[in-house]
Length: 563
Image (cartoon, rainbow, N blue to C red):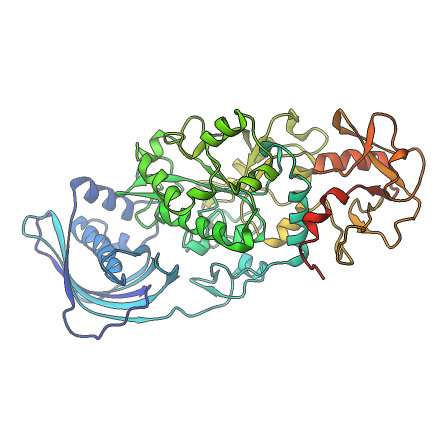
């Protein structure tokens, strides 16, 4: 490690707006490191868990570490000011240009200052300090260009992404909104607005951080959906960014914080420095991205849940690095454990009550791992792998009074691990909606897949803009909502038992919309506000069209011109 090895590096980085002139020394940077740093980096870059091009230097640990750590230094140098805002995310290729002294790198870097990526060539000389405890980087030149858009890969194309870069992955914020799907999902949120928060059905993104848009799984070659070829690599659980998942209606995101390589990162890890990578995204950037979405005026009133799949071995006591970003980027909107205790006496409020408080972000963590309990609630659900789920009516043998999370796994490590077989994957949400599963946590989410979660509007409905006088019925054959052309049409009405909202029937006689006198004693004219109740109503309808009482929720739905 006390080698005086020097290397001239020609780096081609997908990073920053900066542009420098080639051929003159710009600056010198020196970065100290520990013995643990050295061992962890060498172990990562020479291990089976990565196909990084630096593995060709396996056996020459001094050079391996110098190049790996040197690339981080040079990526940071692309920052626009004194604060390091550029973070190395991927080493794609390394070519030895001239013997043992000159190398050409292809690298991906994320710039937190403007949430963009850049391409650059950097010429630098790297060496160890005379004491062997620091790396010295003499940077001679930097030239930058913008990354080029390319052809979208399978899932990005399926999502109709309007811009793809970085191996055909969808650029953040470029999945167009499907207006019908967006309104149908909004409807399903609004009709649940009076339920206690844990009883609300959410679509969840399993390992949402581990997405290709954020440069995880850049070398993935698996085809979706399974079954997989044994040789395929699928390291990323998702294709789309956190922003795009939130935009398309996935309002429950799942993040894995890990302390490794001297930072708190978002990592798909199992234990320290195994699975966790020095190239993984810093944790605070994920929270910052979520905070920016929450603060967007278009998202006001949208309640989201963020789940940290966490534990003591994950974050190693770095509570400040969990709570700090939450405080900086999201705090005014967080419904805290203190709010739950002091404002609601420990009883969960409804989404409507959360909106009134403008507290629309709920953080929850595994077990008692709440990092001091300032912002993070203990998990309030049971959880099982998808392979343990069974369709309606068994519904995984569930107790309907308990919130459940079923999690999937789409990852595949060649012949070593096959997530779809071992854990299972969700390809269709309809049975999970029918069974009132609180958090079906799926992989490879996209708008086409989300359509299977709809149990309200039929395709093409509403056929007119909604008003307070709009009348709506459920079609007896398709089980979906339709706007009635004439509110005086004679139909049965949907009736729920007043003291047990899961018991449904239809009126014994037919009448116009809103004729509440048709419901049996002890029942009321109602709308099924989740997939389970809708299924119970369907069983009573016997394929007849039935009026439903959507009028209490129409003011919440009339805010958009949907045609």
